[in-house]
Image (cartoon, rainbow, N blue to C red; front, side, top):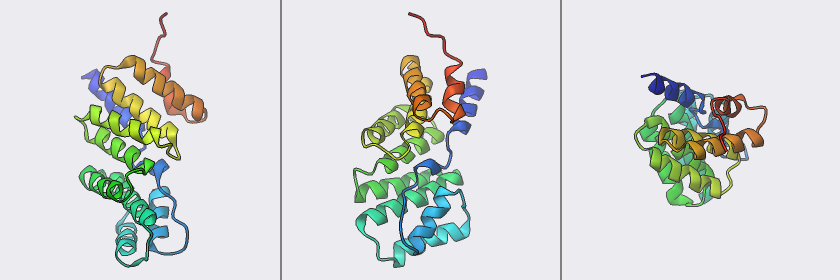
Length: 183
């Protein structure tokens, strides 16, 4: 029971929204408003409406369309609607199979949903290999997934890398305090 509560606390430290991995959209259309809602954690009906209007009416390039799906997926994650978030990430990956943020956010959503930690590790690893904007978030999330799978060494390595990349982010450093390195 204690371990389950600890994992719940660690998952809570993950950016539930994945907002650190929003995909930037330039300009002033609905897609830009959707991006800003995802990036600055401004969910709600208006934010979803902006995303939906962007996908329906904005003249988006393929990369902008994929990015808008990622950003709407982030809004779904903010509301803990992981099924719809994952569906949006899958749509984004169908448009652009090399979109790092889609893999990272999908991995975080799968991890929050629970029960598929191996899939989460695979998705996060793929996203990391594609160099996302916030690789430390992906490393931290993959560390959580590794730890849930009992892969303590891999978890430690991911937390350590996340802490090194973003020393002012307290969560990875806090996780590292629980480890004792034995040679």
